[in-house]
Image 1: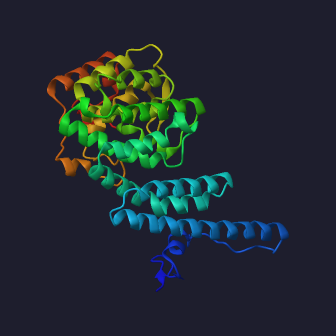
Image 2: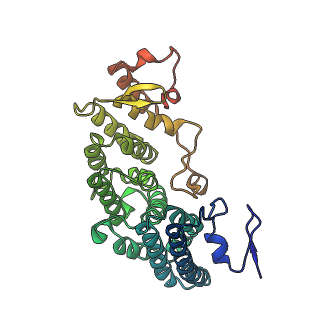
Length: 330
């Protein structure tokens, strides 16, 4: 049996080869130099190694789907190892080929298994790949962020904030701290932090304090977390927004497509995004609003507090006379 690429039509003997190939990549050698030949030989060696290990990953995922959740531990280990190898070699094409091929499936399988086995199953992975344990951000971090986000959102909406496992909130907080230490984040990990806002109001872990502390150093990460906090509890979220914008250390200007804006103006985009027609796309591959029958409506009292902030900071001067909350989106 052969497998054909839908994009380029090339056929492969195994599903692993199909998943790992990149039909947009030109692998031809120019000039036939020894250096380029050696580089290509190294690439082929890595490809064969990847194919062998990824073939095992296919088998492990099939085993999980057949009802053996323990195989997921080895599947995650294999995925982490192959991404780490590609990263160490600086082979970004190989890295993203593997990530694209397996990220969504690993998320789906881990999410499904967690719903069946319970949170303790997910907690095993959070402990094994915790930033404080690994000393860095493992390559499976985005997978764990995604599944943890789904669990936190479902739990909060169905059972309340106190039912959200503390381990999830501490996991997100550690990622946030790690990104601050490194001084530069990763796009997928940054976006995966947004649902941390769903933990606002938890009695054993102050998400609001954590977000506030990072507002003066990375407003771009704080904004989307604040938006998700509005989805979770708009009263606590507006409390946090007021606390942030009234802090003297958060009064810089930033560049946006519309030009220079204050950080206060930028943060007012958070709740505006919640009331807009655009459904949140994080966590990826998850239609949690449809799944849980969720719909966001900004309450009158919260809207009045937003209007007060706008007048207080002179932002209404830049808005038309009949502006609405949705007009604050950037």
